[in-house]
Amino acid sequence: MPAFLRSTTRVLALFSVLALFLIGLHLSSLSPFPEWRLPNLMPASDADKDLAVNTKPDAPPCQQLGQSDDVVVVMRTGATEIKDKLPVHFNTTFRCYTDFLIFSDYEETFEGYQIHDVLADVDSSLKQTNEDFKHYERLQKLGREGLQADELHGESYESGPVGKNDNPGWRLDKWKFLPMIVQSLKLRPEKKWFVFVEPDTYIVWSNMIQWLQKLDARKPLYYGSEVQIGDDIFAHGGTGFVMSRPAMKLGADEYLKNAEEWHARTAAHWAGDCILGTALNQAGLPLNWAWPMFQGGNPADLNWEDAKGDWRLWCTAAISYHHFTSFEIEDMWGWEQQRIAHSLAKQGKQSFWHTADNILHHREVFKEYILPNITEPRHDWNNVCEGIVPEGEGMSLDECRGECERRKGCLQYSHSPSGCNVSETFHLGTVGEGVTSGWLTDSVVDWMENMHSCQSKDIKIP
Image (cartoon, rainbow, N blue to C red):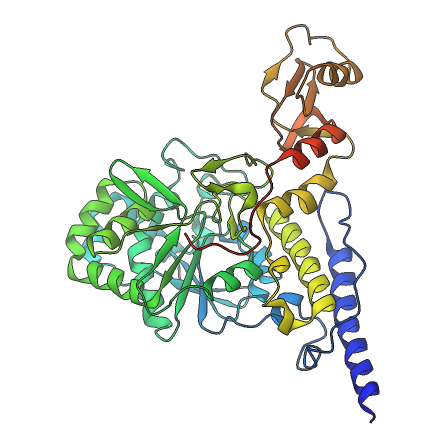
């Protein structure tokens, strides 16, 4: 076959793969948001001649990126939430990962996936004497079917000031962190990087694998979004955190050598991620602060102007978000796949790794993912306007909007039977029965364009 025909065939094959994926994605979308708009796909680059080869017809674009054979993603969950929160990952994020482990408090095969009991090797005397393990022991006898309705998390389970402290599954969760380090290293001793997540964590996979390539896996490294309790600084578990293999060995050795000490500390504490960070610090490994790349919030609720020193959220690459519902995970994953597909079709796989434009920053999440969803008022939606209009009771929706338009710097408004609220701070918000929310789109665009320009598109190393 002539060379130009071979090239054309590969281009057509690429577009067939991408078209099948995007059509399926559109048909399966459960998002309440408007249909996402991306630029028309450009012809693929000849530089990536193997892109369409060895790719399954239904494979998502993230699988074509590669570069992740040395990475294992470790999902920490529990029997009280697994049915509600885990299934969405089977058809979304897990399809991107080359390798992953799922740890829970109950060993089972769930929808064809192996779930490991991370507490299986914990000292039996501890399980028999500590109140937190009553739930665990009952779970081993009765299985998930024996759980009561009030023990299940669901998608909207509210947290107390120190977590979901009235839920037995959550109280058991703090015991999983140190054993999880030991078990992950035991099951995947050859991996260079371990990425730890929860079911409501969203990892921007295309950024994660680009960022890991910039780090030295031979060093003990522990990265995450910094949180402090008392004198202890640690990586917040729900935001996601990353450890190199040498860091894993330090953590596992510290726990195994001093198990009684760490069991006592865990029993007296409420946060397992804090216990893990304290153990690593005692082993000589402090946390590398990775905020604002790692975010503990949802893009719908972020303060987009947030900054610490020279680190500005707006200008930083996005690696993780937290507090996602299942439909939000599905929605953002679909959007990220469209973005990857567009880049691959335009540049090819080889060029993808050498182009800073392919790094997804928080500002692009706002511009491309959030901004298209504020063109019209949203009913039964609360965009968290904190400014109460004193004379707002009895106002109509149009009058409430007019009040925002008259106020300098006002970006958004919300209207409900209790009155009118306005705000100079942007929030997308979330479902709120009886509330109608709106935005002054032109003002939001002006605010966005007035944000300080960012110096670099590359991923920075904290």
